[in-house]
Image (tube, rainbow, N blue to C red; front, side, top):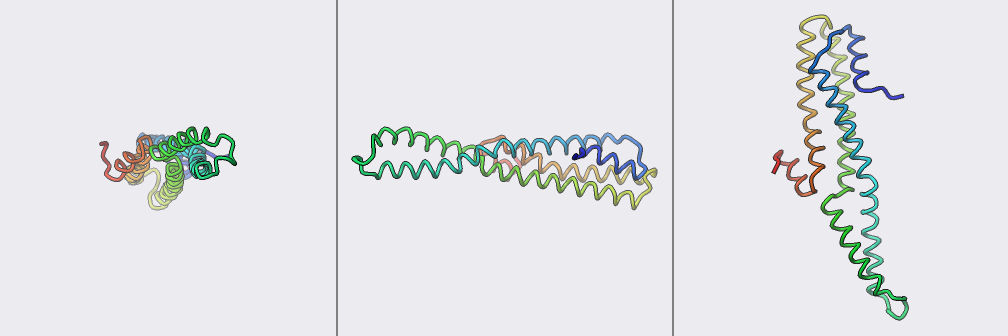
Length: 182
């Protein structure tokens, strides 16, 4: 069974002898867990639409090419299929261009991997902190706060990228690249 990030952090701190509640740390833990869940949800959400559109567009295009270029005497009512297939291909292409589920699936996977790496690095940093400072000392408290502030800044980039995934592709790319909301 996989343990939660919060439980693991608290276990590490307990092993180091740190018994206090640190609100900044608790906030960071909540943010990490929320972003981890959001990234996983995005992976799940974009997986199938991305696969379907990336498969359906070339298949519909090939089928349309066959129907348009075929000898009308050999195909039964191929003209009746051309209009709905053309409309479907156009719709699939627009959906793929605007929402880009295949690209977003890939981006969400990368963000999820980076969040998992963030978690491991944070846990390693906590353990290093315990080796350089006594957990009962004010220096440990100060170093822990510094670590939380540093890691919070790192986490903001993932949040910006996840927020950008709510927008259409062009706006999303511009928003993430410039860090602006317009």
